[in-house]
Length: 96
Image (cartoon, rainbow, N blue to C red):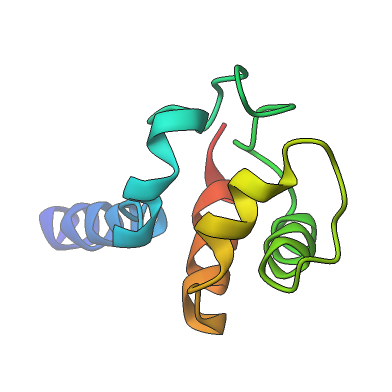
């Protein structure tokens, strides 16, 4: 019985630490595989609250964010679906 409980707990833990969504591959060049790279990016994106990720990605997608380097993100965000944005928000907010 203890083995079953341990296996169930392990299975649940693996679901909680989900893999990066496929669309995150486009983010890695500027933000790094762990979302902590700050180069072209103004700040690390790892650990940002979901709401903030959604707000920024929608802002870039709709070209309402006006910053000197926003054009880089306009190109990246223009084809993101709402599901892509939600998946990125879930993933990035879980990164530490």
